Length: 149
Ligand SMILES: Cc1cc2nc3c(=O)[nH]c(=O)nc-3n(C[C@H](O)[C@H](O)[C@H](O)COP(=O)(O)O)c2cc1C
Image (cartoon, rainbow, N blue to C red):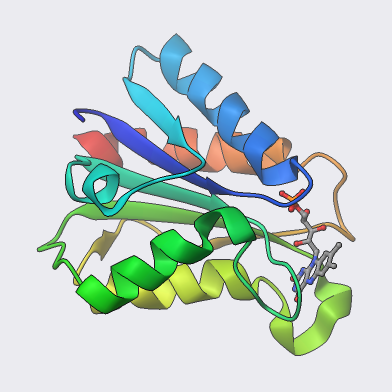
């Protein structure tokens, strides 16, 4: 699609809620977007620019709703050729080494596929904030032009 494709990985709904808030902000800014919670590889390939908003589960793991998508992406490795992306990772620093592991895995993969990060991955710590959308929405908003410009 034209505009921004938002891939949301969530177990208990936090990251999904954040993705919906980001979409509402983009709509207010007249930027087209779609939230994918059960994406296919084609959704990824057909994206103009990409936002991944994902929590972490298990021990540094990607939420189940994006697991298959991540595995396919990793296996098929469709090159991004400079396609722009941003990642916001929701995590909890009390998990230590696996902090924001889901986001880190996507960050590594999209860089490997030669996507172009328009900013460093944002990490949102559940210990620090109960409202991750208050950090993620302004982060995405700040980079809209770089993402779709
Ligand atoms: C069972 C479980 C395992 C978790 N494992 C990690 C982890 O390894 N690293 C991390 O940074 N956060 C971890 N978290 C924290 C979540 O990523 C964080 O609470 C996030 O806000 C949940 O968002 P969600 O509702 O979208 O899944 C874990 C949470 C739970 C309940």
